[in-house]
Length: 402
Image: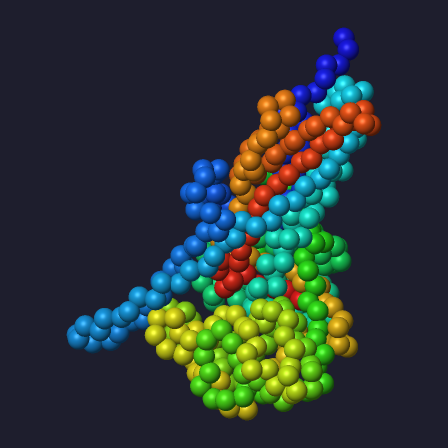
């Protein structure tokens, strides 16, 4: 029997299924906020404010000490629309669904998935916690145990929601080192996400070559200094730089004598607190008046996260600076699911169902829109997705530098 013409709904459903298999990072992070962006005009607009857990401190003694509640929130934008455009003839539309998927949908969805993953993985540069040695590919278990220890000290929940994303070179080294710990149990055989390797150290391991590298700025020839005592908040004034020096987003640093603490007891861990630069910044002369950092520095109250504020002229100690200016080092990522959020939403439909359809599956949403072009006798089809992403709780993730 001759093949019938594939319907737009069949094409869209198959395309979404193919996309679904190529999202090893997006498929392992928080997707609970999708329902807030259901296509209901005027419901919430194009962003969602997400409340973070309140933090308090314990008081000793019989006397009641009331505390103010500081409600923190982050804004998750729904701002990215991407599509793949395809054109083909009516004859190609008469292929079987399997043939059509292999010839058209698989390559199209592969590049779309890569674009989505690459966007979402830029969130890795939001993470201040870092272990490993710049310029050295992890080849033993020690660096991963260090990352697990940081997650535990930062109160990341334990269980089956921890994952690792690593580049191909790191993956090759670690699969060889950990081959006795990965296994072929049924649960691994059923994994649908591309790049799934297995489970070890309480984490599911994935290969992913879309994690952005850390780029080194031009400030490495000097030791920057804190410019003014008792600074707090989301920016730092620093000096002691080379004139016009740059510091890149994703740069991790510590400050002399500013130690990390247990977030609940406020007891010092005795090691330096790590911070990350949140935007590329260039010195004016030899100083930066407002280097943007995360986390914000809090020296008291329920949000306290350091044992002391920075002193004037305290040294800013490089954590990710290695090699020459503008060089790069690869990132790997260990995280709990709730560190990051990703959302997708419906796009408007135009024309009849034979021309424009929307399909949903497992929190993924895709629109397929076709229109015949009379001048060239082909059918033009665009496959669109609309999404947003945000680092919600950076303390629930650790970068492993390579």
